[in-house]
Image 1 (cartoon, rainbow, N blue to C red):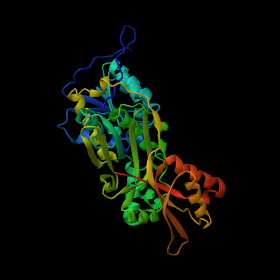
Image 2: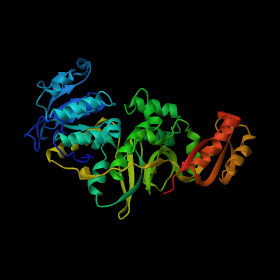
Image 3: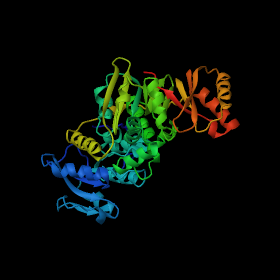
Image 4: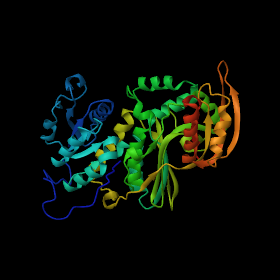
Length: 441
């Protein structure tokens, strides 16, 4: 699971921060501290405490208001603390950061590296925003920061990209990266439940936070996309530059229309290099049933990456939850024991212009009681932008109002959004249809 995208070396005296220790190997039983004892932190502790054959010993658990987190199954010798200074001043070998968020997690990681401790983290927000900076600091201090758990949970996608596919030139990827959204959408598909009911279920199972906004609106997946783009495509992109659309407009009826087209609906994260432009987007899309991405169920993740020489490679598995993420973290700890070095050390990340202007067909579905007179207006707005309508039909929903469905031929994102923006300005949101691009394999 090792992954470490390190920046270039800084030469010359006086430019290296203080180094507490230069660590090339670990003791027979490496000492581990866990920062954060939520779902993931607890799962990591369970693995460490239940597998005596592992060459690790849990010595510290840090959490705010730590007394409410204590559990009886953790060995008596483990120090529970709400003072990060106790961890940083200890003889811990590796800090496992699973508290999440940007701050104070960034400060903790920096301090751990400066204190001579390597870091393993599952924090996708931290790595997406500060990964290059923290990796460079790790290099300067003689430590490592590994973050294989930050993308796709227990699926070793980053390790596969960095090591297994290092011999290829990777040019694009498309993926299902958010297990929460995938659980919601796959259960709407299977049982016809509303989005609200599916969200409540996934919260009950512990896959979603009390506020699932970052999952639904694509923020979580955009962080993972940024990390993947850095490792696979060698492009430096910030997650806020990724075009995002929420899944909150999806209704059960959309899956019926998708099936008629031989598709289902998934939140897809896509990135592709075209000369000096990176096309990148996170949004709900119609996915052909022939695609491996369509077969992701519940909290599964999947990645299809394309190389110039090797063609397509598919990786899939459980992506969300404490168990899969803990597997990735333990794998990174084992990689540290093996002193695995990252092939990304000498990468020179490049900046690209970021665009979301993919070309695809679109399914448009009316929102609520759309006025009949809006249909020709929508077709006209599309036509003026060179977008051709394939077909339009009205559907009577049992016990409800009727709605119209429209399929448009392949066109740019800008053309569709420009036309719908015109409709929104003229008719208001009630007549602006929901639109779903169709992923072309």
